[in-house]
Length: 296
Length: 183
Image (cartoon, rainbow over all chains, first blue to last red; front, top):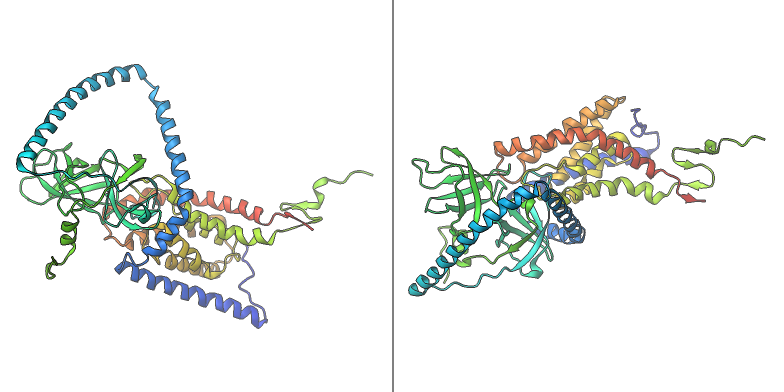
C-alpha cells in the first residue's frame, strides 16, 4: 500500500496544527479511556445508566433478531426431527410410559408433602414470575458472559432477581434499563452460586470459569463424594435463588470437587422467567459486612 | 461514426459525466459500518463461550489499514465509547484500546510506509491478539487460565476473518465513493 501523503504537512500552518491537534486529541482520548477503565474496574455498576439506556435503544432490533433466530432454530429442529422418525417414535413412546408412571408417583409425593407441611404449619407462598421475556442477545465477543433480557425496570425487574428457564437456572439480573436488563450468566467467571447435590445434602459452590463449564467447589473437604453424572440443584442459601432448581451436571472430577456442565444452556433457551428474590432479608443480610448491624 | 465504448466515460465509481459523489455517504459509511460492527456480536446467540470475533474492532482495523488517511487518529475515542456501551467489557476498555491501536498503526506507518497486504494482515493479527488478551486481563473478573484457553477459538477466527473484512471494507469504500448524485 502506498503511503498516504497525509502526514507530510505542508508549509500551511493550518495543516500542521490540524495534524498536531489530531495526535493530542488521540493521546488525550487514550488517557480518558484509561481513567474510565480504572474507575469502572473498581466501580463496575457506575456506568450502568448509559449502558441501560443504550440497551433500551437497541431492544427493538435485538427483539426482532431474537425472534427470527429462535424461529429458524425451531424450523431446523422440525426438519431434523424427521430423521429416523420411526425408531425415535417408538423410543419416545417407551419413555412416555415410564414418565407417566413417575408423574403419578410424583403426584403422590406432592400430596404427602402438602400433608406433612400442613402438620408443620409451613405454607408455600405463590411464586409467580415477575416477568417472562426473551433473552435477546449476549456479549458474544467479550470474555465476560452477560446476556440481555427484553424486560426491564418498567416490568418490575430489579437487580439481583434470579432468571430461570424451564430447564434450570440461567443467571441473575445485574443491571436494569427501562425495557431491557443485563443478566450475569452462570458461566461468567464472577458468578458464584450455592448448590447442593440432588438427593443428599452435599453442599458446594458452583463458580463460573468463563469457558462454558462450572467449577463445583465442595464446602466440606475430605473424600470427594462426587460421581460424573451427579446433578446439582440450588440450595437456597444466600437468599437469591429458590431451592431445588437444576443447575449443572458433573462431568469431570477434581481435587476439591469437579467440573460441571450447565443444565440450562443460554444458547438453547428462548423465553426465560424472572422470579422475585427468594428471601430478600437473607439476601440483604448476606450482603452486609459482619461489622455492620442489620437494622430491624 | 463508430459508437465509442459506453464505459469510456465511467470509472469504478460510476459515470464521470453529470454525476457526483454524495458527501453524506462518503462521510458516514466508515463510521456507520464500525458502529454496526460493534452492535452485531450482541445479536449472536447467547453462547456459553466467547466465539464471535470483535467485529467493531476488526472493521476499525480494516478501515484504517485498507484506506489510510480516512479515519482521523482520534476516531478511537468516539467509536470506542459506543462499543463500550454494548461490548460487556468494563466501560473505558474500548476507548483506551481503540485509541492506542490507532496510535500504534500510525507508528507502524511511519516506520514502514510501503506495505504489502500480508504485512497489514500481520499488523492486524498482532493487534487483535493483544486486544483479546488485554480484554481477558481487564475484563473486570479475575483472569483465570480456562478463560484464557476459551478465547483461543475466537482469536483464530478473528485473525482468519481479517482478509474477508478487509475485502468487505474495500467494497464499502467503492460504495462510499460511487457517484450517486445527479448534477
